[in-house]
Length: 191
Image 1 (cartoon, helix red, strand yellow):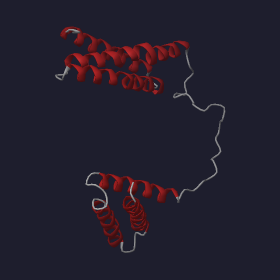
Image 2 (spheres, rainbow, N blue to C red; image 1 turned 90 degrees about the horizontal axis):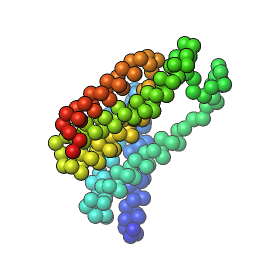
Image 3 (cartoon, rainbow, N blue to C red; image 1 turned 180 degrees about the vertical axis):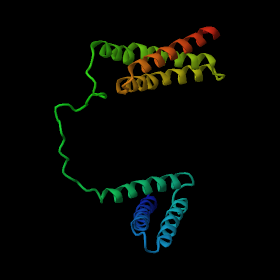
Image 4 (cartoon, one colour; image 1 turned 90 degrees about the vertical axis):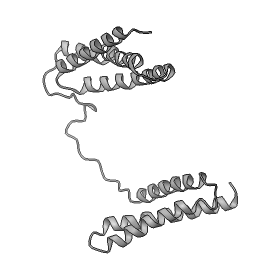
């Protein structure tokens, strides 16, 4: 970075801090002249973003301006952090309490494990394969997006299965999704 760009970045940071102060004051002071602070804060941000084009290149200036605005605003907000003592908890024996207060049964635990693992995985793979087979996109795009979807869907199935009290509903949905998506893929053909 040249000296001009460093000076412009410092000026952007100062302008962003000033805009954050103005907007925060408008947020806190409900009875005062809020409109003046809001207009002044947003105008300062717009001028700083547009003004960054001159000392830096056309595309690089606004990018650096928006980045510095976010960093400066985050820094200003971080100055108001308050550390409070932790609340007393009733029971510190379990960091992750069970989602339901019912007595657990062995078959529910095994079913949750099967749903979170292989059954959720099969349902996620079924959606990914169905996406790959049925979407009217390029071959590479379909394969990559279908493959990227699978771990996210599997993670969602795990989280939902382990948190839901109605284990039979989760079983019906995941098995149904697996059957429907894999059947639809087989109808179209895997190649």
